[in-house]
Length: 474
Image (tube, rainbow, N blue to C red; front, side, top):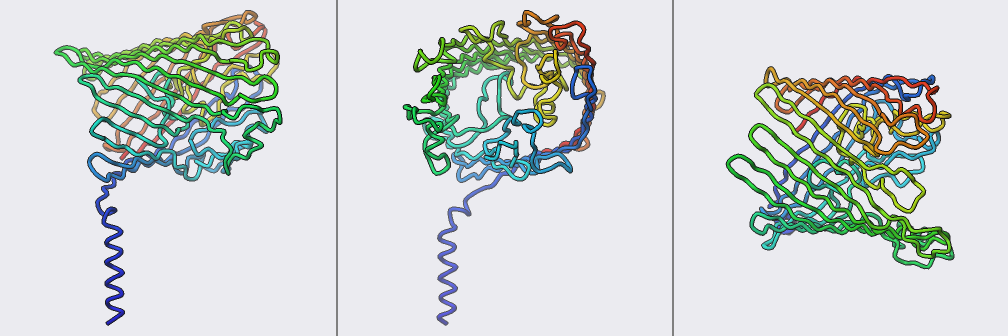
């Protein structure tokens, strides 16, 4: 009998401690893709260079733990993000002298060999989402630098610890946020020797990188037009280079980001301007460094698409300021087109070329006489234009063709040309089911003479890519 009451009491305690968990509603969403690509050339310099071909995949799962209608815990993880049959880590710096850029907040500490723990399981997002009587609070690790249009965004980059607050005031939504980009406090994870950069002359305790953001969004809707306009002001205080014995400095960067989105009849338009100013280098001890370096950088983006039944047309214009003199007292190239924007299959493509191929398609610095700038990756120092057209003959299938052209904003004085080149892309996407789709794409890059660098005698070659991708969304 005692055993019976002991079991009953134990079950009662379990029920008591679990009652809050029973109130949780779990919502799961996700995406899995498996893709393959064939890239004809790794380099556009006319030198013996192999292409590359491989299969790759990623599983991304988002889980919301809904405690109540106004409170939830938002999480997300990536799993088996890897090339089929490849090693679990890579050693790019052994070959190219550079570490692969991080793709998540949980990027392996062993980054000296470019390891990705996200090739196994990487929990990248975990934050509280609470709709209070005064506004929405979001606190925790979440995608960073996401605002307005896709231009300049870094949602596919590393996440960051943030505190966000959004409050509606009539048709306007006020936004305030704080992000901890880097923390160099002495902890069990960061030894004291690292905290002071290993230098006995370090005298500054504050070496963190913090980002402060305020903005507003105005939504409008009329008989003929609807959309939103907004602006964000960012102050980035980067003290990670303070306290260094030789040449310690601060970075105080300010960014203004106005944007708009509008739908007028069959036409969707969007645009954004980013302007950065402040000090890239604010010297602590002037005698140890020749001069401060100011920031003065501009980028802009305009995009439009029109849908006419089975046919669609669209175009994009983009600009990122370049720097004609990298050694003067003003830095003009502080901005990029962002990590999320992939206008082409090769040119300025970051998701495939930058992340999976590994920042390839450069003419590679070690090749004597050629430009070291890459064709893929985030857009920098460029004017860019694109025209595109699509057709959807049946609801399940869409085909798109686009033509793009880019040239440098600032051509190095000794270069023979400012032309990056042209690209023609053809893609087709077929919806097998509502959740499963297959994409096939072909891109051809007509390489411009910019990559000849300083000599017309340098030979360059065109390049092409063939890619296919199976995507399951749920």
